[in-house]
Image (cartoon, rainbow, N blue to C red):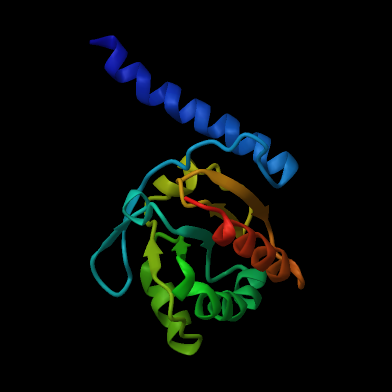
Length: 171
């Protein structure tokens, strides 16, 4: 009975440890599985990471109060438009409790990729998000391959290089 409650904690600890190693290096020599999650989509419905297996997935954690997030968002939309037909998707995870803030912001800055709502910050904690924005790039096998904390001009070029590398890899 006790093993049932301990196992999820062990898995969470292993995932958090892998994320810390990735955060220190920016990429993984021995990639860890990306923790699965299910979140509501702002436009309706739900998305689970497991349901995207077989695609390269960029997960971007953001908030409306984050200046670099605002700067990065239109560039992320360009990346999404460029690579979405090649087995790539982008999930923008808004971390604010009040999703109406995201609704208002996105009315002025519309995007074409799915915006997920992490109102309770459960997924943010699962991925040990410590900076805004934070971006995690997951390969087709569901493994974390790259992590970026923060954004500065030019980071989008790194995203594109990493996405192209992962798209070219065989499943």
